[in-house]
Length: 64
Image (cartoon, rainbow, N blue to C red):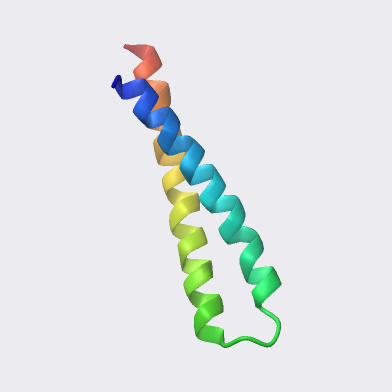
Protein backbone atom coordinates (compact mmCIF):
# COMPACT_ATOMS: atom_id res chain seq x y z
CA UNK A 1 0.00 0.00 0.00
CA UNK A 2 1.30 3.45 -0.84
CA UNK A 3 2.56 5.68 1.94
CA UNK A 4 0.02 8.41 1.06
CA UNK A 5 -2.93 6.08 1.52
CA UNK A 6 -1.62 4.83 4.85
CA UNK A 7 -1.27 8.40 6.09
CA UNK A 8 -4.77 9.22 4.79
CA UNK A 9 -6.25 6.34 6.79
CA UNK A 10 -4.30 7.41 9.85
CA UNK A 11 -5.71 10.94 9.44
CA UNK A 12 -9.25 9.60 9.30
CA UNK A 13 -8.71 7.44 12.39
CA UNK A 14 -7.10 10.28 14.35
CA UNK A 15 -9.89 12.69 13.41
CA UNK A 16 -12.58 10.27 14.56
CA UNK A 17 -10.67 9.51 17.77
CA UNK A 18 -10.19 13.21 18.47
CA UNK A 19 -13.86 14.04 17.93
CA UNK A 20 -15.19 11.13 19.98
CA UNK A 21 -12.71 11.65 22.80
CA UNK A 22 -13.53 15.37 22.80
CA UNK A 23 -17.24 14.79 23.36
CA UNK A 24 -16.97 11.90 25.81
CA UNK A 25 -15.54 13.87 28.77
CA UNK A 26 -18.45 16.30 28.51
CA UNK A 27 -20.98 13.48 28.55
CA UNK A 28 -19.29 11.30 31.18
CA UNK A 29 -17.95 14.17 33.28
CA UNK A 30 -21.10 14.52 35.34
CA UNK A 31 -21.11 12.24 38.34
CA UNK A 32 -18.33 9.85 37.33
CA UNK A 33 -14.92 9.55 38.86
CA UNK A 34 -12.25 12.08 38.06
CA UNK A 35 -9.86 9.30 37.01
CA UNK A 36 -12.07 8.25 34.07
CA UNK A 37 -12.46 11.87 32.97
CA UNK A 38 -8.68 12.40 33.22
CA UNK A 39 -7.94 9.32 31.09
CA UNK A 40 -10.39 10.46 28.41
CA UNK A 41 -8.90 13.95 28.42
CA UNK A 42 -5.36 12.58 28.04
CA UNK A 43 -6.50 10.37 25.15
CA UNK A 44 -8.03 13.45 23.52
CA UNK A 45 -4.85 15.49 23.95
CA UNK A 46 -2.72 12.69 22.51
CA UNK A 47 -5.01 12.28 19.49
CA UNK A 48 -5.20 16.02 18.95
CA UNK A 49 -1.42 16.40 19.02
CA UNK A 50 -0.86 13.49 16.64
CA UNK A 51 -3.41 14.83 14.15
CA UNK A 52 -1.32 17.87 13.01
CA UNK A 53 1.78 15.66 12.93
CA UNK A 54 -0.03 13.32 10.53
CA UNK A 55 -1.12 16.35 8.47
CA UNK A 56 2.52 17.40 8.13
CA UNK A 57 3.46 13.91 6.92
CA UNK A 58 0.50 13.99 4.53
CA UNK A 59 1.60 17.32 3.07
CA UNK A 60 5.18 16.09 2.77
CA UNK A 61 4.05 13.19 0.57
CA UNK A 62 2.50 15.68 -1.87
CA UNK A 63 5.72 17.70 -2.11
CA UNK A 64 7.79 14.73 -3.31
